Image (cartoon, rainbow, N blue to C red; front, side, top):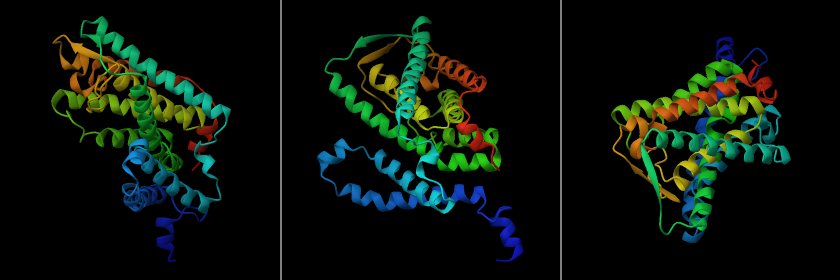
Length: 292
């Protein structure tokens, strides 16, 4: 290979530069997803109902990561997927943390006179369980995609701070196509979703595991939509409770978009980001992110 091409594509040690790994990973995820999607559609309806399509996306992310990790001589567990007691503990802790963040946000909106709740008829524990399985699939897929191999290799090249900024912006922009992303709602939601991405990035950084960000993501979405009945990033959700708004401004309540488009949401999520920024945590993610 000519010297100028080596400089473009290869690092000092002769391995592929991290930027090309990130790009190649996203392209491979898309390609694997295209291969798996027709197979998924061949499944009987009852199996597709039991297996949300986001699990196909998660499988595509795992397959692409495995391919790249094989070239590096690293196991899949290096992504922060060591399925042991510590992983389960972080998953549970993250889920409870995500629940707490949304309950705190909703409590602030209620305290400021923005809404009250009524019990939703016909929604039982089975509904909550099915929604939990769906939101787990969503959390696993999005965290593997945005905090998995691509994020971790970008952190080796850009550093953790630069990667946090780039992926927070990407995460927020990819939500611009969601329902209700207009006007002031779009501005508040963009800020809060970017903050959520920073929060989830710190969850990986402080533990070296994807369990905590997956748990926080799951707890946040499930509590917001399935338990408290708010929209989840603009997608309507039937909850255990149904919020009744009091005609207050949408910047206070988030309106139909959900609490992610509210000022209380920004304050609570921002506070959590600062807390994780200050917390030293474990060194697993930090050591990975500092490599160049």
